[in-house]
Figure (cartoon, rainbow, N blue to C red):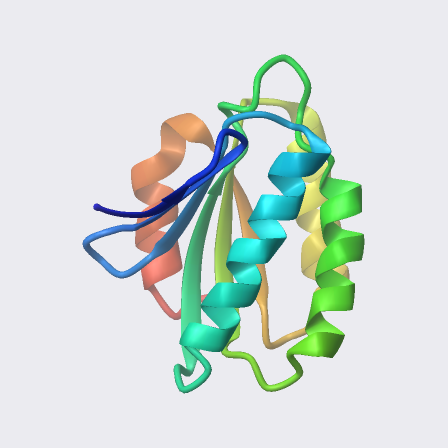
Length: 137
């Protein structure tokens, strides 16, 4: 893995398979700000790519979970700034829990077709990586 940037709240690396990996080390507003700053840089640096693949790990953010609602709202704003960005294929690694199954189904129903996001429990990381590298829905 190649470490690209390390902030106290959000660490960014690129895996050997070329997946953009972002790990939340805390659930603060600053960590979320850094996350979106990194996404902007990725969109600019990879504008000529067809698809970007992402691993977002929210299991190491401490006691409080990262607010997925505020992330979805901010991502919608980011989409308007980068309308010609590469399509996204994203896995979100989470702690086991029933709520994420519901959120996964909800995201599948409302997400734009150019981006695909799936939630996986952290213990299914290898399965998640196989999915993100595939082209299946």
